[in-house]
Image 1 (cartoon, helix red, strand yellow):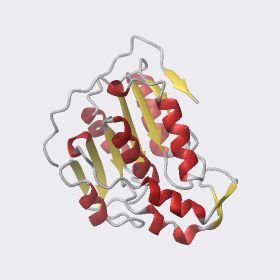
Image 2 (spheres, rainbow, N blue to C red):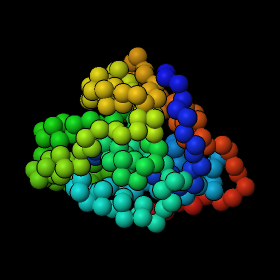
Image 3 (tube, one colour):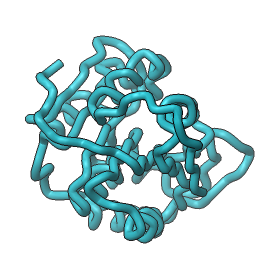
Image 4 (tube, helix red, strand yellow):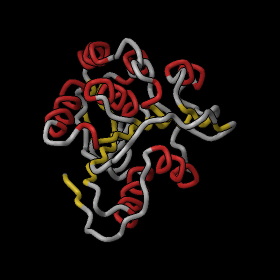
Length: 212
């Protein structure tokens, strides 16, 4: 793992962005929400259900973030949510944690055009061909301040290429897992590193604020 970047954080607002076909019911999202509720109840936590349209997903997120203080906001993103998290961090200049982030989702998701089933319910949604162009339009050319980012990358990811993820995160703090999987099934073991990067310290004096 590379050295921790020298970046001053005072996170009071924390956004979690789930991956393709996922939801706020994902194991990682629930584990992170539980940690915030127990140890940092003063933080405003938001993990929205993202619409299938990448354009609409980013519009939803950025509209809410207009109400948040950028200098005290952080974002965590998993898979496709990691791709979105890069866009958010580049847009508002906040720190971001990337969990097996998608690097080129326009290519990766082209084979998923059509009706798709959600992971955590019996619901289905239609992933439209025009969403591929929306993804391309959202791709940041580069990460302008790599020290803003911390990535957890599993070399055993069965969905995404860990080498592409590594190239994306060049110059950032990265935790490599020799095995692992795309879902980061052992996320609870890495959650302390996420907390440490964001500079979060336990504070149980106030109630949690959860927005939906």
